[in-house]
Length: 93
Image (cartoon, rainbow, N blue to C red):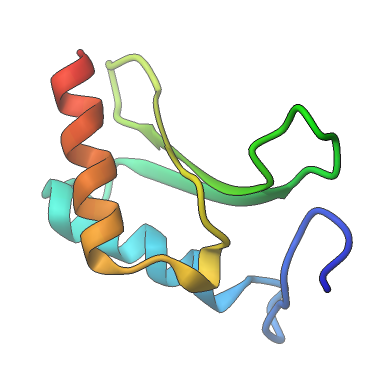
């Protein structure tokens, strides 16, 4: 069982799974290095919450910030999950 807001971190304080997700988002979406990508794993114990989800913010210069949500823990997310979330976000806009 995991507790708290964040998963394991490496020596620099970064969760390796979140780093990998950010790299996947940049690659799949074809984002430039000017684009800031933030990823956080949110673990909510409230019964009204969906449980653990990973939220990715995409901040492109001159654009509104976009958010994608994946209802999985960061270390469970696959390339296919990221592709599906990005596709859903494109379809919704």
